[in-house]
Each structure stands twice: as C-alpha cells, then as structure tokens.
Length: 140
Length: 140
DNA sequence: AATGAATTTTAGAATAATTCTAAACGGATA
DNA sequence: TATCCGTTTAGAATTATTCTAAAATTCATT
Ligand SMILES: [Mn+2]
Ligand SMILES: [Mn+2]
Ligand SMILES: [Zn+2]
Ligand SMILES: [Zn+2]
Image (cartoon, rainbow over all chains, first blue to last red; front, top):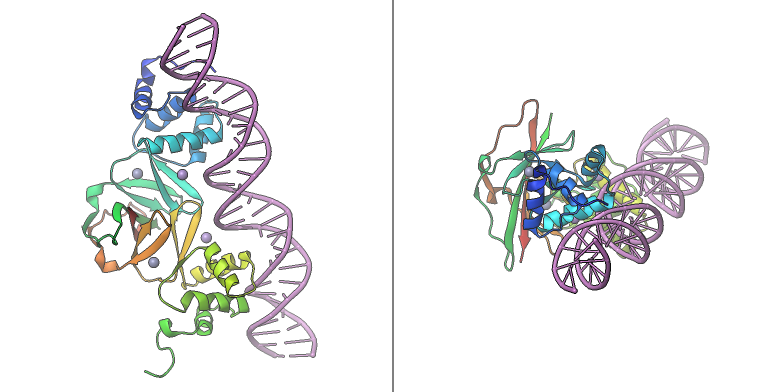
C-alpha cells in the first residue's frame, strides 16, 4: 500500500497516534480521522467498519477490532459494555456517564457533574474502586 | 409465623412459578429451586447449566436460556450486562447496584441506600428514565 | 535508496455465546 | 384417558469476536 499522506489535515490523527506510541499505518490513520474528527462518539466495531468502508477506506474487520483495542490500551478510547453481545468504544476518555436509549441502542454522554454521587460504599478488602459507571436507561 | 409463604421470598419454587403464570415443568422447577433456595445470586446461563447438571438435573442448555428469559419476562429475575459476550441474571429484582470484580467476573450486590445520587440530568424530550444502573468496577 | 527486522494487516478458520428449528414430550383440562 | 398446546430438545444456524500464519508495510540502519 502507499505511504501515508503528509497533508496538514492528517496532523491531528498522526500526532495522536505518535503520542500514543502507535505506528501510523494507513488503516489506523483513517480510523483515527473518522473517530476524532468531530466531537464525542460512541461506535461499535461493526459501525466503524461500515463507516470506513463507506469512505472507501480499504481495511478488514479484524483490523478494526485490532485498532479499537490498540487505541483503548493506549488511552485513546474507552470501552463500554451495556448490552451483552455488543461493545461500544467511546472517544470521550474523560470521566463521564451515559444515557442509554434502549430502543435504538444509542449512547449519549452525560456530564460528570450532572450526576452527583454523595456516598459510595467502601471497596471490599483487597480491592479498589477502578471506576464508577452510571448508566441512565431510557424508555419512552 | 408458622403458616406458609406470606412473602414471595418464602414461596416454594412451585408457588413462585404458578404466581408468575409459568407452567411448573420439571426443568423450570429444578432451576427455580437452585436459583431461589438461598440468598441473592448472579448466574450466567452456562454457570446455571453446569450447576444443574452437577445436581443431576437432566436438561439442555437451550432450556436454561429459555427459562432464564421466561423468568426475566415474568419478573422473577433481572438481566444485567456488564461485559460484552457474557450476560448475568440476578435473583434480586429489587432496585440495587453492583460491585463488579473485573479479575474474576463476579458480581456482588450493593444496597440501594449505600449509593446516594443527589442529582441526575433530566431525561431527553420524549424519553423517561427507566432505571439507573451504578456499577462499581473493582481492581486490585 | 536498499536492506532487514519488527510490526501490522489480512482472509479465512476457529471459538464462544446465543438463538432458531421442528419434532418429540408432557402438563393441563375435560 | 384423550386432546390440546406450551415446553423441551438436539443440532443447526447466527452473531460477535479472536486466532492463525502468511503477506504487506513501517522504520531504523546502511
Ligand atoms: Mn475487548
Ligand atoms: Mn436476553
Ligand atoms: Zn461517552
Ligand atoms: Zn444483584
């Protein structure tokens, strides 16, 4: 395949990958551009694959899985599980919560400070709290 | 206090199924006995199937799936999704939260009043809050 | 630019969880 | 007991994800 474009448009995605210690391959650059071009997004592997294909990016589904996991390991994404058999990847890696539209399966960010938790139980002995996830399930 | 089951907690497996409008078949009775014999439990289809087989209950995995879904539809269980590719069924159907031990995949109940949420965002237009799930992820 | 080592991508096979199919079975009722 | 119809079942099918190993690409070194 051809070498990566050096256009300024790529700078953000390229820098992001470099900073994360990930080789900026053609596929990773294309996915990073899609993921980080605009605001916060919540994608599934399949939805991202479809979107990339729609933009005529040539890659395989396995590469999408690899990239999503690599990005997550390097802190570029956060993985979210809400429903069995479907995993989401969130471009917003800062602490926040979610609305979950049960009807459509869509996720929407909820700002951290709009959910005030004023007490939490102590973590069991030998364990520490890694994260508190609040999912606000919506129905009509 | 010697008279039988005034509360669903005390109901026999048979009574429980009858009240739920489910035919008390051999398989459902055996599963209900395992599930509701003691306190709160969090099972996976596979773990329940293995446990039943260990007690020499003759049934198929498909029946375990059917029963778990039937029980859930009739309010005897609640389904919980924490991790993609693994679903849990909870015998505690009252409102409560969970500790999730990431290392082992085990769930543990967290009493509703030990998590105090003093503010929540308004539901988006046309939607209402169906449930708020709090998952406290634990790591060493 | 060419070389070579390490990393990444890929197609397709493999695995895992769950659902489907349709035939056999068995509770409920009369 | 006879009949009805919901339930169970084995095995196939489906879906999501991971694995395999060969080919391609990146990148450091000449
Ligand atoms: Mn994963
Ligand atoms: Mn289900
Ligand atoms: Zn988010
Ligand atoms: Zn519980």
